[in-house]
Length: 475
Ligand code: ADP
Ligand code: ASP
Ligand code: MG
Image 1 (cartoon, rainbow, N blue to C red):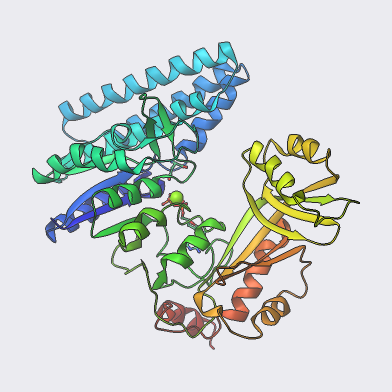
Image 2 (cartoon, protein in one colour):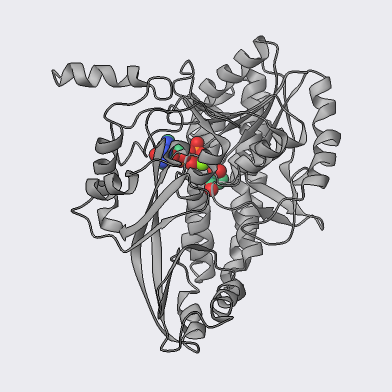
């Protein structure tokens, strides 16, 4: 069986036209003799709206929460009606959508009475996005001649009970994927399941964290030893920078697992940071592709990328960070001091992105989050503490920076007009990161891009796509 996992993000299923394109892409793979397993996100922006409904309900705004839910119900019903001409199938799907939204409304009413939004309830609420999108997509596929069968992701992706960022249990997932998906595949069916959602062993709904549908795709691919994991999104692949911040970003044709993981971790939203793990474990290539431009070859993520003439492959930016300065009169290097500091971050389950120390101070960067005041209060028992938000981490990634002299000078020369707060080059030696004000981030990326991608290696970057631009500007 030439098994391929195809994950489609929110924009690839956002409306009937997008779902049409997605169905055609999957039908194309079937025609090539492949056996796809399809993983879909919620329709674009639905997860954000469900979270908004949950927040409104938890503040006692029952009407506000139900109004959001009602708009979502109409959107899903209209999408289904735009896809299914067959009246019986459409009525059945409409009924199913109503049942799911009736259930959601009940939860929102209960929440507005209790006014306590726990991570567990939040997961239950947001799970509706993928639970419903996967049903609509499966029905739409059938209508278009793709023999789809819906599979409930919560019966396959089993996690621990860390709601909102649950950790998958790969042994059980492997077993469940074989039990639930292989029989469908053997029957020639195309399983369609929601990404992002999962359940713990007790059957309670969990999620894999924002953007987690990529992770679901990779987990299923790993569990079934797929030949490829395809991540279908709204850009041509992994680009040399976020095209929203840097319009002349180029497509990276091929990149290593290590580089892609680093980029994803440091904010390139195109991939969920954990996506690479299951693929690396089984050495399954990952392909990032554009559902709006399916003939483009996208980006191939493989274990060993070819040598590249340019030191960097891409620039990632992580925004909404805070910097915490811990200043002690007591000597920093005192045995156990750093471990005391880290124990506090551990206690608050707060991951630290970057650390830098001097004789009397430690600076750390973390995601700006609600526990910062509590973390700061705990750190305050050890030393003087101050924290500042609105920071961004810029991360330049490329395997070919290893052993090259003068790279740091070139990087900081390119952004000499920008104030740099912290610098780090990890032991992995494939990234160079620094922290700046969030407001400077887009400008920094454009300056770095101009400096490092003016003569891109055609073996690694899609330089062809750049040609029309230079023709237009007459260069
Ligand atoms: P999906 O809904 O398909 O999962 P996402 O919005 O999560 O899509 O990710 C795709 C987006 O990631 C792109 O629209 C782009 O703006 C952003 N992005 C950030 N960094 C990069 C990068 N280096 N290459 C490509 N896209 C990037
Ligand atoms: N729908 C979820 C989110 O928006 C998961 C995903 O799209 O990957 O975060
Ligand atoms: Mg995504």
